[in-house]
Image 1 (cartoon, rainbow, N blue to C red):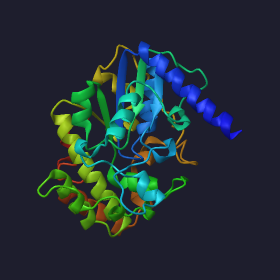
Image 2: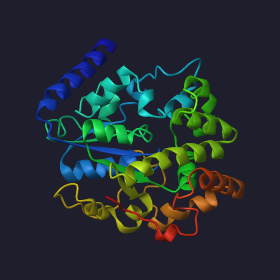
Image 3: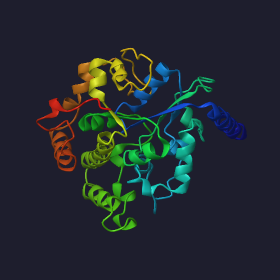
Length: 317
C-alpha cells in the first residue's frame, strides 16, 4: 500500500508536469497564516475555472528547509519564512519554479483539488504563506500577478488559538528558526532576525513581530506595484465581488460568503460582524495591548491600530 501511495503521488506530479506545457496564466496568493488565503485561493480557482496548487513550502507537503541548524519543533518549522530572497536555497528555487508552473511534488499540494478537477486548465492559482519577504523577487523573476491579503493581527492571533491543526502557534520559538550570526552584518536579514528574537518571549509578541515585519515587507512590494493588496475585512464586509476591482481577469466574481476548507469548526456560519470583531472578546486585554504595541513599533502604518486607519487604502494596484 505504501508503494502504491508513492506511485500515485509520482503519477500526479507527472500529470502536473505534462499539463504545465499548456499553462498560460499564473496567479500567486500570499498572506499571513489565518488571514483568509485559502478562502481567497478557493474563490479565485472557482471563478477562473483554474487549477490550484496549495502551500508547496509546507512541511505537510514534504518540504524541508535546509536553513535550519539544530533541532526545530514542528510548530516552529511550520511558520518559518525566508527573511529575503537571498535565503532561498537552489532547492527552494527549483520547487518555487515548479510550483509556479503548477507542478506539485506532494499530494498535499492538491489539497483543494477534486480528482481531475481543472488539471488541464490554462490558469493556475498557487498559494504560499511563506513568501512575505520575497514578493519583489518573485514578481521580478517570474512576472506573475501577486495578491496579498491582510487581516487584523489580533484577529489572526485569536484564529490561531482555535485551530485544530497538528501544531500550535503557542509552541513556536523563533530562536529555533533564526540566528543573527547566520546573516552578514548590517544586512536586512540580520536586522530582521535580531528584531524577531527580541520579541521571542510570549506568543502574542512573537505573532505580532512576525506579522509586522512580513506585512511591512509586503507593503513595500505593494507600494512598488509588484503586489495587489486586499484587506480581509473589506472582503468579509462587502463580499468577494470586491476582488473585481483588481481587474486581474475578465471573470466576474459573485459576492457570496462561504467558508474555506480550513475554517475552524463551529465558525462557518458566523455573521460578518462576528468574523470581524469577536477577537475583542476572545483575547485578553493584555494580549490585545501587546499586539498593538509591537505592531505600532515595527509597522507603524499597519492600518489597524493608528488613528488614520479609516483612511487607509484597502485595495491597491
